Length: 485
Image 1 (tube, rainbow, N blue to C red):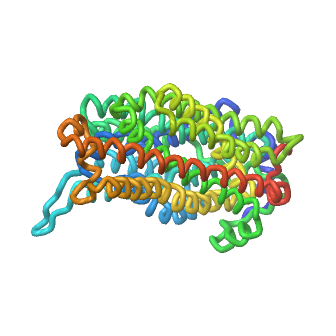
Image 2 (image 1 turned 60 degrees about the vertical axis):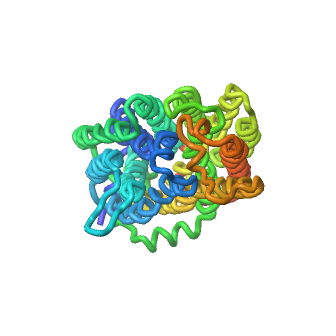
């Protein structure tokens, strides 16, 4: 068993300087952030190609929500905890490298989804796609817990909110990448090519990561005198977390934010396509790319600002994103009620910049309430809650509510018999319909999704309130005090 004294002698001033030289720390942080970007490129690609894939496969909004959300999140959340437990004692860089290769391969296989007949059983393309998405989720479960644990050993507590804010930009920059590359590829070559082109290079990334990133000593940046020992078991980690209300109020806040954010993000291209007629590529370049670039800046800015305010306001890491989640609501209402595409862009850019600071907060607080031997597991527990409820149910909620409103509107028009959303979707779809059917599509198709988006965006405010609640417990619960040197 490693003693506190021997670890302190090995680490020296690690709790102040972090592991490695400053340039090398910067390289490692950038490499891990790039991996996280790749994670969200592959994760978010399905929502980017939505305007093309939905008409071809003839799927409802509810099914699209299942594919983009719960289909990915189900095993992602379940597998994440055992991988994190493994990462508490095993080589974290190796774990990440293997998992990158798995999710990259499964992303490429999504492009091969087509109807398969085995004997007398026929499996539709949508179910093959769902199975591939589950595979992507299994691979991506091995990214963030070990990455967060590594960052915590490379960067001391006083610098960690900025480092984790930088890493958290992978969420929005990955979404930018999926849109910037995947959208135009879809327009030019089809949605299947987008999966091949964006999926396969990840295998090379996995090799480079393994060859260039060092495994940092565990607990290297813990303050002197911090108790060291073997890996804490899962029940020990839960016992510690159950005594940390700051962790659970933060988890509630970020889960609500993820529920809204993933839901809106996964249907944003579909909404722009229905409301303004833009293709997948046009929606990606004109709307999604600037929105998520602004969101990436907002994510980093919140972590940086929290660090600057930490000495005077150590709870800023909680109340800053709390303000952001409440303040973003009117901007989303502006975006989803306007018929002017420029106003839509402004609302989405402003809302994204203001709200995404919660990503820096979730990792900073999630890492800060436990010691070095529990960080990967605490992160996995946090992501289990966030992704099962937030990512899993957010897109499904928007899709299901949209379909319910669509059916209600069609029923009010007296056209429920045999009328489905499939008739309204695809290039030139309305021109092929009778006048009454085309009019029904205009009344029900885009407006049903618009209402669902507005309902979901309003829920952000609840997440903000939970962050303010978190402030009450933050100073007491943090092991590595924010702002301490």
